[in-house]
Length: 259
Image 1 (cartoon, rainbow, N blue to C red):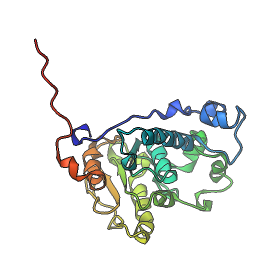
Image 2: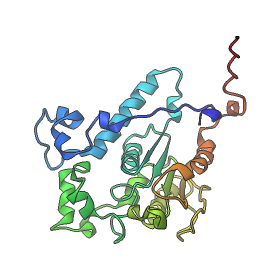
Image 3: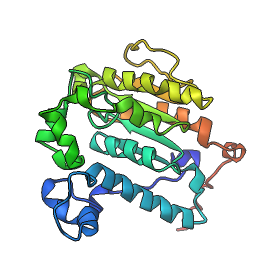
């Protein structure tokens, strides 16, 4: 990214909210709730992490060295979930790289494959609002009024790249096909806003690059990692973030140190 003349910042979500249930009376959630237990409709940790990303963007808007209208967000695994929530809630993020986000991210809830609502409710329950837990009983995912394709659609018309690894190499838990189908399901909203969808509803073979639309998808042949899809994402992002000046050298070679 630096070779392209782009900046890069790393945000540590757990500096805003701990990644555990014991921290719900602390962090930003605890601050808002004055240290009291949260109510059923109070936010969960994923939303708190997304809130923190927006506060970082507040800062970037105050920094003259940053073009705050061309700031993207990326995240992998649980942080992929949070990155998708962030771009859905904050229209200032220009683009998103959502890597292996799985359940509560870009994966359809109504898919009996990989991570399920019960895994979230019985483990990382604190990621979600308390009301979410009832869909692990007595209600089910079929009772949900929404699904993940609508979360992706909240990013429209901005570009979103959905990434996954190979199920055979350890990324089956995030359900790559379920995330692909959610991206397909978000397509009508992109088309409504005069943008391009994925261009297909057929789940593609590994390493198939779908970046001609404003929703993009690629499943690499590696495991639970964003690394192999970074070059593809950067190619996708150039369409939206590059300027005519980007063809010029952005950095000069450092002067040699004299002996």
